[in-house]
Amino acid sequence: MKIKTPPTVSLETIEKIGIDLFKVLEKATAVDEKGRYFHWNDIYHKRSQFDDAELYWFATKRIRKQISKKVTLTEKQSGKWSFCTPDGLQAQLHKIDKLAAGHIDSS
Image (tube, rainbow, N blue to C red):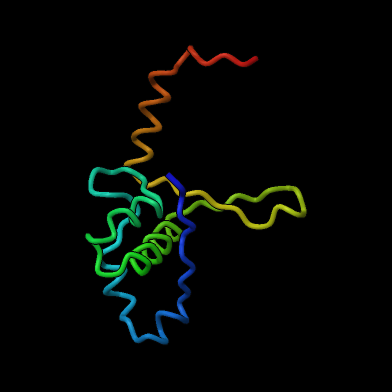
């Protein structure tokens, strides 16, 4: 299955078409209803569940950006970088960490 490229919806685009951003943000979450981190492909293939899949993706990205942690990299070309670990994902990472304790080897 080919991975779809996420749409680029800007805040200016939303303002031009007159959509209330707060109503869109109200429905979006950083993870799905089961606490799983989901991607554009997941939203794209379930787009019938959303009023507007592209706006939902935009809102999801905005919410994730608010809870993201910024990382300062030392290389000059690297630019800005951040990562998002919502609560549900953090719990899954903790479980992996507990299960892997003492079993991870480096080569």
